[in-house]
Image: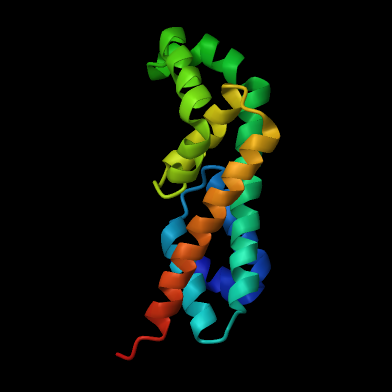
Length: 162
């Protein structure tokens, strides 16, 4: 996080997009802390709240779409071949697919609020063959709510008198 602050200070909105896109692809960046910091920056008028929130949302969603695409194109063959190394047998993979057929949309929305899990749900949505437009709809809802919640928290932390 400490390296993110000067990066955001220097590059602004582009840095926010890049950090959220990289974070969604698995680079260890503390998303919630970063969103809270962005919300704080909006409270002290360094950034525009709406624009910052939209940029965070677009960065997070773009990474989720890339993860979905990876899962859709190479995920299932890769997991059938190499899944045994991470204890993901074909039977477990089939259970995951059935779960996503039944609860996939709600899983995508809720998983946005669980660190680390949001990346896996994007990947497994692609592996399970979820329709892309359906995936984008629910991933957008979840990402938008997640970004909005944490930027609001950061905003209100920034306006608290200490």
